[in-house]
Length: 137
Image (cartoon, rainbow, N blue to C red; front, side, top):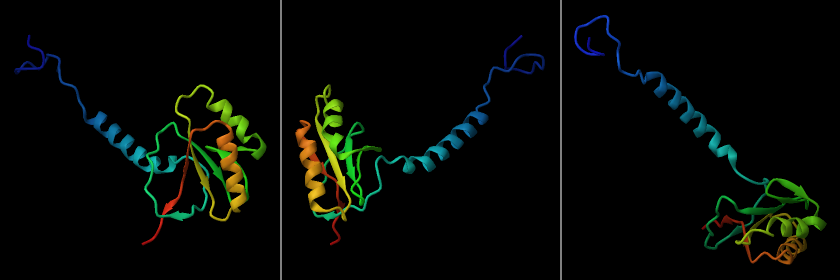
């Protein structure tokens, strides 16, 4: 008795039907394509424009954001301005790469941005990147 071959009607078929697997994979692909743009990190701010060369951001990057109301965020968590230095010091106590990106709304007073920069530097952060939008040419 041959398995899956020949003219024997009573034998078992040794082939796998992959059509349902392909259907499931296509549905998952569409779901991931739709949800991927929604997974951006951070707080929505109106960024200032600058004509500079960009830095490469990595996935474990810490972003400090200051919104138009002057509220401060670390990634998506709101932090009182007085606790920013302490929270960053705790976060970077065990990290070797001490890098933070500052994302401030264009409407935030300059003094608030400088205060946030001073708190970041005071926490022992070695590299501070400013997040901006490309300038129109």
